[in-house]
Length: 376
Image 1 (tube, rainbow, N blue to C red):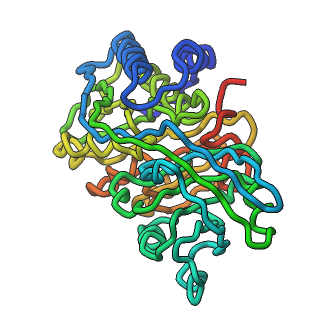
Image 2 (image 1 turned 180 degrees about the horizontal axis):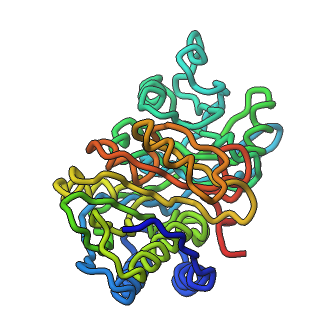
C-alpha cells in the first residue's frame, strides 16, 4: 500500500460517539447495552466493507455490586461516596466498623511496626504495576482497604480495578474513595469508618467484534478499542472515542481500494473494564493470529477536547522512531509496558504495540472513570 495522507471525517466520528453514548449509553460488560454496542459496530464494519465480520462470544466471571456505603467519623459521622474496587469481596452483611489507619502508599516500610490488624487502612495511591503491594496489604491483617487515586484530586467517586489475574490478591473488602474527603480523613486524629459493600460474581458472557481488511501475506496488524464502560458515565472518552477512531481508520483504509501487505484486523473489545478480559480472551482463542501480529494499535481514551496526545510503545527502536515521525502532534512518546489496557495481552504473546491516548492533566484525564465521562 502506497503512503498517502488521509483525512478523517469529524461528522463520521461524531455519529459514532452519538450512537454509543447517547443512543446506547452506559455499556457495562455482559449487559444488553454492550450487546447493542457490538451490534452497532458489526453493522458499521459490514457497511464499510470489511470481510469476516465476527462477534466472538466468550465466557467470563462477571463482577458487580449492589451496595456501597461508607461513613467516616472525624468529629462527627458523615457519608462519603465511594466505589468498590473491581473484584473486591463483600463485607459481612452488617458491615465493618473500625479505626482508620493512614499508611501512606502502603509500602513495606509504611507498614513496618504499625498495628494494622483489624483496622481499615487508608492508602495514598494505587496498586502499581505488579501484584506485590496488593499481596502485602491482603495478608497484613487489615479488615478493609480504602484506596485514593491520587491522579484525580477531586471530590467525586471514581472506579478502580485490577487486571483479572490479580483478583486472587483481593482478599479483603476494598474501595476507592475520592481524593478530597480522603485528605480530610488523613488529617484527623483517630478517625473511624463504617463500611458496607455487597458485591457479587456470576458466570456471564461478553463479546468482541472484529472485521478484516485482507492483505497479501500471512502477517497481521490489529487495530482496536473497547466497547464497554465502567458503571459511572457513558464512556465518551473511555472508550467510545477509541471505537470511533477504529471504525474511521477502517473506513479510510477500505475506501482506498488497495490491498495492504498484511491483513489488518479491526476490533472492538468487550469487558475491558473487567480488566482487559476481552483482549485476553481474543488472544487465547486466536493464538495463531496473535503470533502472526507485527503490530497492535490500541486507541484507549483519545477524546479529550483539551490536553495533549501521547503514545506508549512496546517494541524496538525502529517502532519508537516510526511513532515519533507520525504527523499529528504527539507530545510524548515513551517506551512502557502497561497491564491496564488491551494491548497487554498482545504484548504477552510477543507482539509489539502502540497505545494512543490523550491527557488533560499530568498522566490523566480529570473525568477518568467517573460520571463526568460523557459527551458534554
